Image 1 (cartoon, rainbow, N blue to C red):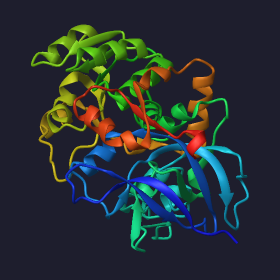
Image 2 (cartoon, rainbow, N blue to C red; image 1 turned 135 degrees about the horizontal axis):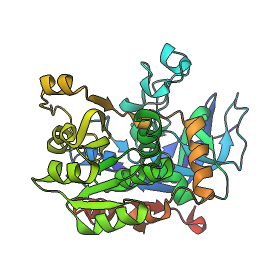
Image 3 (cartoon, one colour; image 1 turned 120 degrees about the vertical axis):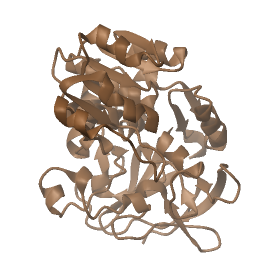
Length: 374
């Protein structure tokens, strides 16, 4: 019989500003249909920052992180598709697998998902503090922990040739960017595209656009260093954000892009997106703003021009289908992802990683877990 184990994890309690504390928690063994994964890499994502900066609210204390890759080390009853030793990428949007949306191939639209409430599909958590109180895995993952417990269907097998650092990003930022291009916008070769925001998700969008054959691919950011990284990822043109952005994009695309992506979650740039596309084109909201913020869009102009606004939730991903496709494209050299990782950190350096994100200094920091201390 499996027993509870102790794990070190980055925990947000909300009583020390935006600081996380690395604590020792108790992790219960996997229940029916669940697996325990030894985390090898965890991405530091803007969604986590929304929580610890007080812009989104989740149950506390929260085990932070949702981009994870690792190795299956224990399986619960009823698990048949996974075995100890499998390399896996974790899907944070843990759909119910039973509703009409799931059955129709749209798990991202599941009406019963509990991930946003930091609960496993049965509404519980496998984490507890040393005093016996529940601790909640952010987005039902809690990636910034030495070990995690997730449903077996959320642990997607990955080719072991894919480095854990890259695999962890496939679980969210890369998967979201890829899915926004392939699933939501359905970009085809020769279409023109503009991407606002050259962070982790924006760079992933650019890489996927290059794979899809889009041209030109225009990257927009306020940081020249980020634009250099965007060019390396496949952007054909780079623009510093400014008041004349619609005119600049129009001159590069003969009147407006076929598709535009907002990858920041900033209301002002989301409202600007329709002005960057031609009539009949589409604008895709990929970035997520703080809770409670509304947009002002010209509904008459949108209708008159026949423009389409697309909301991208997790890139419209079907993880079991899309994660292996992304991994295969990476291994084939068709999808450039190595440049996404601008820094590596230990679990104890998690606060410094978020501080660097706030300063706009990094594309993506990945927390890695040393075998010697695992």
